[in-house]
Amino acid sequence: MEEGSLRLTTTWSAAERLACYAVPRMDVSVRELRNHTARVVAAVESGEPVVLTVHGRPVADIVPRRQRSERRPTELILSDLDAISRLAAELGVTSDGKDFDVGLTTDDTVS
Image (cartoon, rainbow, N blue to C red; front, side, top):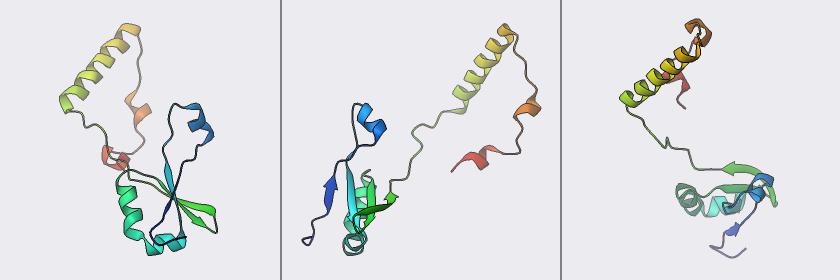
């Protein structure tokens, strides 16, 4: 492959074939990754998934980290919980708080 010519291929999984759109991905060999690391990182930073290949065989996915898309104010969360509690009371639904205690805090669930 010529210097500076990374391959951009569009591939679709079975689920993507059924969807309205597909995300193009970049296939990069180990050698290309070594020689063009900055370009590959720039592509990933811009949101493009990269498939790392060895002798043309996909071996790893390099994907952008997911960012939390929404941070809701505490007041909205408490308001929603209050509405859920009122609806549960109207429907006669009760639950024991122990049912939900699995020994985790909200800090444990953040990745």
